[in-house]
Image (cartoon, rainbow, N blue to C red; front, side, top):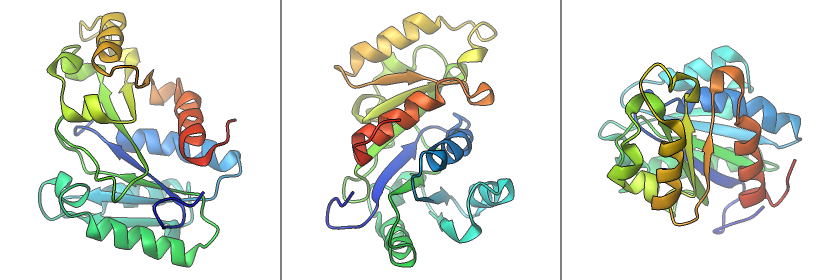
Length: 208
C-alpha cells in the first residue's frame, strides 16, 4: 500500500501506561508475519529504549526492524505536536526495507487525550484496559472518541476489579458513533486475530 506519499502503511498504537500496548504488539507481530505481511516497529519511550529492547529480546523481528524514539517530553509530543522524529524513523525503515507493507508505531504511555497526527499515521488504535475502570468511555477522551479502532484490553480481569464489561463495551460503542470497538486478552491471545483483521482490512486492503 502507498499512502500519503510514503512507503509502508503506518499504524499508531496509543493508550495509557500499563494498558497493554506492548503486549498487544507482541501478539500482533507473529500473527501478521504469519499472514505474509512484511513489517517493522517503532517504539516511543520518554528517555529509554525499554519497549524496543523488550521486543528485541522476544526475537519477534530482526533487531534492525525495531527502532526506538526517545520523546524526551510528554509522549504525545512526538506523535502529535511534532512527529518529526517518528516520521524520520519510519522513512529510514522504508529506505532500508523497500518491500515493507506495514510499520507499527507504539506511543509511550499517555493519558486519554493522546492522539496521533495524521501526518504520521494512516490509521491508529487506542488501547484501554478494564483495570482502569468502566467509566473510561464515559469520560470521552479524544483517544477513546477519535481513534480508528478502540481496543478494550485485559478483559479477563473484569470480575476481579468490579467492572461490568458488557456495559463498558456498550458505552464505548455509544460514544464512538459507529467506529469499531474490540475486546482483547493478550495473555490468552483472545481477540488478537480480530485486531489483525481490522488492520489488514483498513490499511492493507486484505483480510485473513
